[in-house]
Image (cartoon, rainbow, N blue to C red; front, side, top):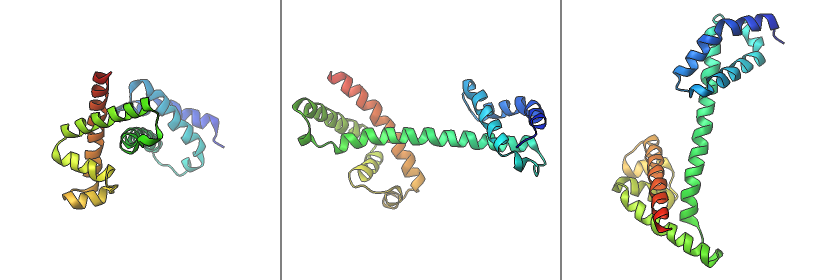
Length: 175
C-alpha cells in the first residue's frame, strides 16, 4: 500500500508534465485528464515497483504510453470488427433464410456491394476477394501479391472503409 503523502507528492510534481506528454501522443484533449487519471491509478496499484524506480516521471510516462496503446488497440479492434462484420454479413447472408422484404434488402446490398467493389483498384479488389471470398489470411494474400502481411491488412482496412462509404451512398440512393 503506498504512502499517501508520498504518492500525492509524486502526482503533484508530475501531473502537468504527464498531461502534456499524453496530449503529445495525439490523445483527444477532452480525454487527456482521463488517461492521466488511469495512469496514476495504475501507478498507485503498482506502487511497490516504485521503490526501485529512479525516474518517476519516466515511469509515469511509460504507464501513460501503455494506457494510450491499450486504448488505441481497443478502438482498432472495435473498428476492425465493425467493418468486418458489415462486409461479412453482406457477403455471407443466406437469402433463403430471410423474408421477401429482407431478401430484397440483401439483394440491394449485394448489388450495391458489387458496384462498390468495381470502384476499388484492381489490386484492392483482388485482395478483398481473396480475403472474403476465398478466406485467405493476410500472409497468404501477401505471398500471392508480393506484399507484406501488414500491407495486406492496411489495404483491407482502407478497402473496407471505401466500401462502407460507397455502400452507405448506394443504399441511400436506392431508398
